[in-house]
Image 1 (tube, helix red, strand yellow):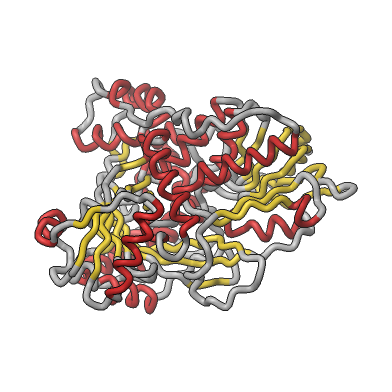
Image 2 (image 1 turned 60 degrees about the vertical axis):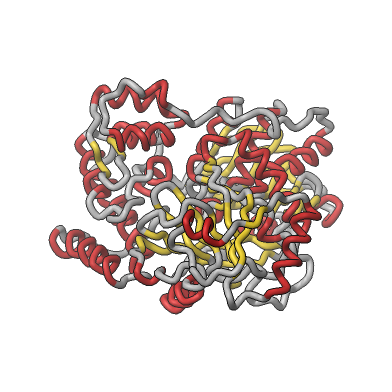
Length: 536
């Protein structure tokens, strides 16, 4: 068994965990991050990608609204390569309560969130799909976040500054001695090998799995796993974020994301954090509600649906089945003060928008515990810009492929350029993904995994959902010696099943035709078997 030491072990590879890791690295604290699957396996890539301005929570949760607006401004400066400053609209439609508008305007003014009423004709000209029965429209500084690129870039910067990352490692044991955490044991999900990490302090940033990690340390903690369902529209139907001007509810937000729009969400409390199930009834409920903002929504082609759990912390039991009335503010738990266990901290709840702030407060507490005098730098020190134009501008690619690479190459730009000179084959036509990108996204060691590649290149994220490119990528991996035929077949099976899961729940019209084509090619023509364990 490998045994090594670190000052801090961070459990959880979502935005909060990698934010903590980078903050620690910037302060010169030796740290390792442990993630049970790939980076962003959980909540951080299973959301609508909204850069909150605070408007959504201005009336009911002022603390979360203030945090969101402040971090909105900071993230636009410090991670610009993963943010599109789309702006946003809050729209009142006839069924929304009249008195909420005044409450909302007053709350935004009190907090300091800049809002501007937009004449209806201008709003309709800017957003042609918007309901023409809308009564009031306000402009607000919302934005769109690409959580995939942000995760990769923040992590890469932390590693560049000395941090270590262990993906596909599950925490199986937390050893405590004299009410003090002494080490944790982790198991490699692929090889079964164990590692023992001796550490002065553990940060539990496992999101929906936080209660499971706390249980390993014999610490009682209740996390509400609030599952939300979202749908990806085939086209980008809106230039700006469109919110419904009412108390937050189901199906009241449309977020532009690259060439598509993400629509959602719902809120249902579930027992298990691994529950990413999708129900047809839930989808139909969303479409019915979404028509209030976008009346033609049922006629718009949809690519797929997905879901993820929001981790909501409450000290007392909640009777709210929807989880809508639980605060979206962060919860930072010092288990030495709360439970008498030294060397153990939990950071949970919060929003994608507030990950940096959550990390700052967490690392402030870590430094206090370890006697380290070092100030947070993440509000000023930017993550290296993702723009890769200079490195790739002279490469012979189609304009579409080049445009996509300019904003997705990131830290791999130089490696992709070198690989492109050897092979610039397009593997995924929908998203213009080259083999050079796939090769640059492969881990130095570990198994060939199409889901991991997808999160770093957008392979299979277009309208065909991997129908053609997944098999092409698997075949090329075997041809180039990256994977064995058995490894490629397992990766293909897992990848296709995950993609088709999100397609089946929305399978009507064009989406159903696409699913039938995928099934026909893979399960009929090529005889691929269904079933099996998946890590994507």
